[in-house]
Length: 145
Image (cartoon, rainbow, N blue to C red; front, side, top):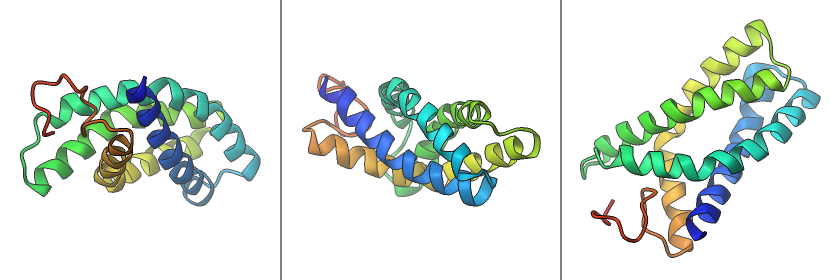
């Protein structure tokens, strides 16, 4: 249960803030559309946070000890998991046509920029809950990642 709470808290806080910034200032959605997207996104983030934590853990097993390797694998895990979900959220929030494409592009650019910062944030939050980094459970074979 601590894994679920930690992963969920990290994802909701981080991506609510970055989602609002993207939707309003890059996508060009109105504040009412941003609010709708965030209200739709919140329950979806709760549902997907732990699966993402597990996904990231699997992907990060490929990462080496170097910062560059961690950057690449954190970014890859975020792009492949979160961009499709984000596009669905803004579509449901009212984005259409060019807005939807800008949103997808914006999300991809954000995930490229935020992959490692979010990974660091997730590991920090998991540490606050007494959990190992990388989305792994305490019984993991390789607890250093």
